[in-house]
Image (cartoon, rainbow over all chains, first blue to last red; front, side, top):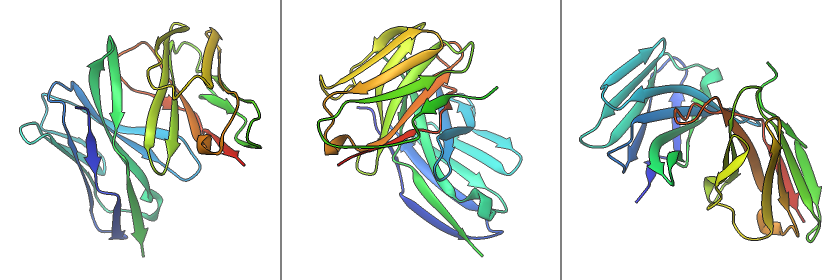
Length: 113
Length: 114
């Protein structure tokens, strides 16, 4: 079935690295995504990775993909208080004739001084 | 570019009343999605339009929910009659083309049904 799982909470100290993990079920997913939701706002695309890549780096963000284990992670280096938000992992599956996003429940990241 | 515009941002209504949520997509984006977000169920896809045509409405909870996209610049999600369990944040999201799943979300409409 279609399922994306992630832990619900993560608390880190400012300046440390954060690692948010996600597992997904559909091995045919072409792309995997990380979206960020700040309080009172909609989701915002952070980054995405093509399924034939193992890693993608974009400034403080590093995405790692282990296709064999269907595991995706997002590492935020030098985490700042402004990074406090909910982070959603999502996989793209072909269903009903189109590419559909399946979201995880979201990981709430709290950054403390 | 003003982004995806949703209205109202907040709505409080009484059970049984009709609720209409509105969305103006980004110009040129021809895919439009309505999502519902709750603590219990997370993000649920309600309906997907492509070029103003409903493609997938399998996520619409029941007949009380309906959605329309009369033209490329406007969509509505209607709940009639509303129930307390419909309380949630409703998001509209749009995408240029179809398939890349690079969605731009609106700020959402927070609905409270008393």
